Image (tube, rainbow, N blue to C red; front, side, top):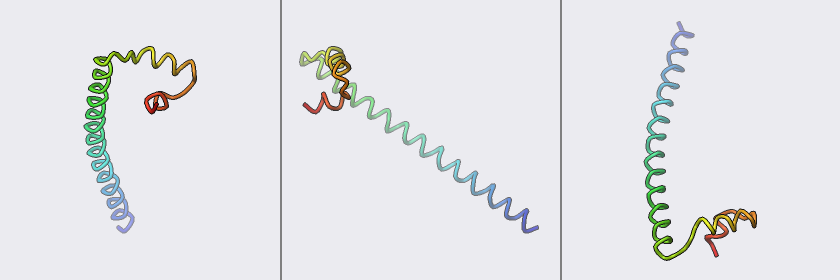
Length: 73
């Protein structure tokens, strides 16, 4: 009887954990969507200002530097 109760408790714990993690994943996807929208807005603004990000990325690849380094110039 104790083993059955322990098993039921473990099943409940794991189901609860999965439910919580599924909700966390949904929230993370929302955040990712917002970040993507913000990035696209900045890309468009840079393009409107005449910055060719494709050329900038190619230069970065040749220099083997991450794009973050390029953006921090």
